Length: 67
Image: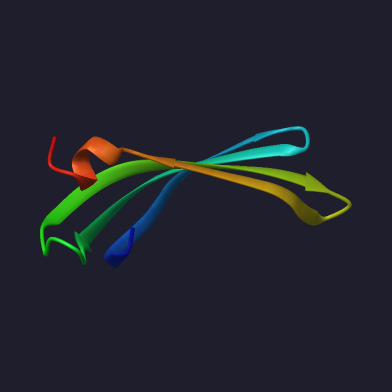
């Protein structure tokens, strides 16, 4: 899956100990279909010793595939 991201906006940062969750929004074009779509996303980071040790990303796949 490859997308051309046109707008990428982190909107909210939530810190809880060694975990940081970032909520945001993006506007993209799916390169395989040429379809434009917008999706909210969430990124969850684990930070230990000032370094990111884990990253997980989630977004609305239904928006990407036009479902």
